[in-house]
Image 1: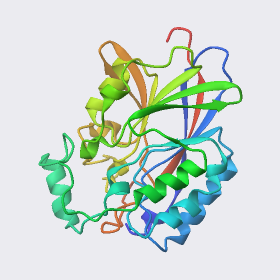
Image 2: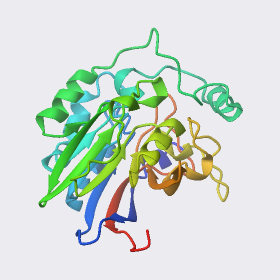
Image 3: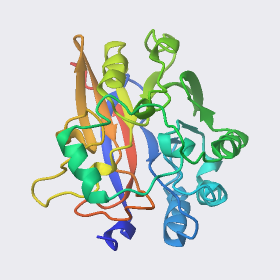
Length: 289
């Protein structure tokens, strides 16, 4: 299981969401890096993703699992930061992980004893230097989507992005960004770290055709031919990773949840759920959609 945590792979997904007449857009999603100082193989793999030459990059948070990891995150993502991009943060960007018995953690999640509505604000945790991470991303020109809107210009297209801070620690403030896609944008999408239903419902009801999220680690410890036991939020296990759909108030959105490429430093295990990044190719939606 510890070996599988270093078997990095690329997931490729095609999503028919673009208006008629737009050329396909290639979006690289990286998530849940959970960098610990010294993880050289992970760093080299992340750097190699620049060879995909995406149109833009979306980082869906939880970059850190070590207060000393900021320089290595920025070094790992430096080749990708030559492309347009945007980001949201997750709880592990703000706070360091705590040592817990992984068996007890799994049992609590299966029983729904915490986290299904978002955890309480963190008290007494180690604060990660997220400001340095933010400053590095901002200096590269990546758009900060912390409870706000932003946009990217891609080959003449105006791509509107709406982001939330992490629902897992109840920092999401959808009221600040409510109102739906930008009317004159060529394409709009929603970005959030943890795919809690309240966030997905809000994005979908507002008419966003696509939402990207991370956080779940794909279940991290899965059962072959069965799948994930937990999602670490109130999303069902059938949608713990990959592409699916979400419905709310008569609207339907595509949802992509990345299984991420890291683990907590205190639970460095994966089973039947290899670490990943995803290259999403956005194509024209069908005329009937």
